Image (cartoon, rainbow, N blue to C red):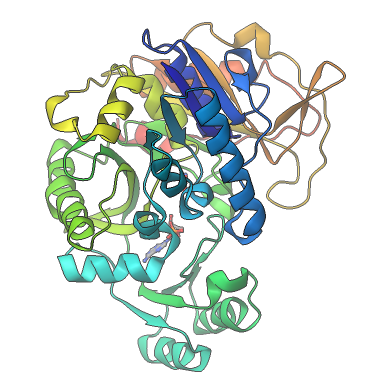
Length: 435
Ligand code: AMP
Ligand code: GLY
């Protein structure tokens, strides 16, 4: 089978890496891909990994990718980024009779339209924070003054993971509302704002692969969004992740499946937009059980980098089964081991940073001792591998347990270098503290 992976980051490199291992996959294409993926896949210079605000350009790239898939007889397309999904890539591929793993634009609203997701949860009784939706900033401000702090203010649309603002004071909440709604710092994503209750607890990410009706769970994970150790400082795209997340006990997993996954999938079917793809449940766990922080409509980045190495089933087969509505007939296996991903970032990230720094040492660790180095922001310049983004590499290791995986991942990261490289030293600290 010929498979196409859409995207250019670490998550997509992990997908390519896993799909390459499938005996039924003869060739993997990545669009646009990156130098890491180019080691095993054919990179195609078509970029449908653009912001939804790119509008006509995104649609143009999606149409080019469809034409490529038709011409090359691609049998399965796997979509990484949410923007391609919200932009309707799956709708366009479906209309051309192409098999594609991921939700339609209407179903991707679970992520791209937070107001839609909150309303669906309210209708189907899914536990989540209390909320109100606003299209008028004065009303939103009046509401937060009535509610008091802490409170969370969220842009309803996509904002590259930065649209949720946890406000500890009323001043912060008022400022956040003004920035999102009046100043439009995230463009039209802030036209509608969701104001919600601040939830206490421990966060975890739970993923299921679904055909819209049946689903199979993957191992749970936890990511580290803040730039600094101890989860301090501004949020990033993700500075590391580990799986499994010990906070997700078998009882909590069952509760998540029954109280969250089943009702949401049923609600999506009832609403005429069945959800096929990866349902990513961002959860807050406390004594009352799991509550939804957010849904995403795709694999997490960097969670995919730790979940996929633990999957013991042929990924191409499971994804094709999800596309064909055959998941009920499939069982998947997950390793009992653990995986840890340490993200090496450019100095200065998530603020301004320099690019084009030569990267050394990957070959001394990649593929040895359970280590996989997934590329996120890399490029080739005159034959030399250089940095080209904020998050540069996801140095990942699998091992029988989390402590061993942490050791392997850091031993590998310490042997890789580029000028200004920064990485957190405490990835997986919550899991280690629980032992
Ligand atoms: P989101 O983009 O919705 O995932 O939010 C980003 C981060 O903000 C989450 O990972 C949480 O750490 C935090 N967050 C969002 N909503 C809430 C909430 N209602 N209560 C507490 N923390 C939240
Ligand atoms: N790791 C967070 C995300 O993928 O949204």
